[in-house]
Length: 175
Image 1: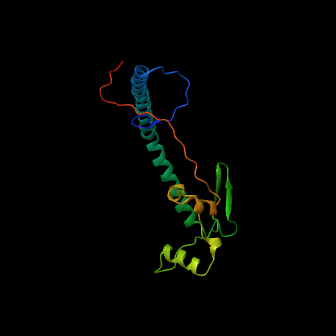
Image 2: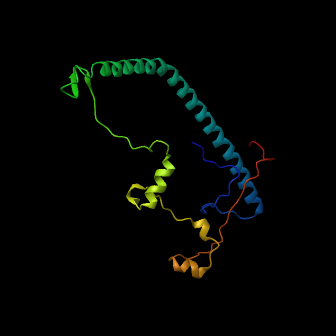
Image 3: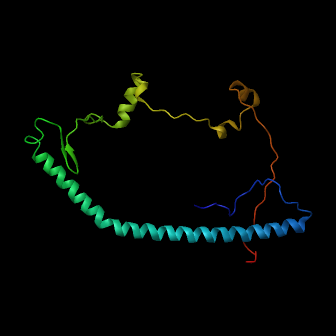
């Protein structure tokens, strides 16, 4: 939950009129103080969240352990009774829930092969419906392109001269 204010260039939208460099310097000093105060509040919040997470984990640990013991016990019971209780029906409904077996299939690499081998074979055989591809424009790669090359892909370069400022953290009083 951090705003990441320190040591970052900021492109502000003007709403305060700064008359001169002294006003600008006072604004930077106040911004530095505000950054420290915000970071202090966020640090306190994160500490409180961490404490609550630890408390919740400690309170939940014995419950999770009991949950696992009971779940494992049900799984063993199911396996032991597979040929008896579940021979004719896949699900048994009880007062507080249901037990059962479900057919499922898992796709994995054949013996001696890796998933990378499967992926390569999918590409070789052009079974591309089984290949997930995430496409995204890499604007950083296009920054050095000539304008005519950008035009070929329906892109343009827009030059901007954007104001920024940076706060020096050292030497600023805690106001």
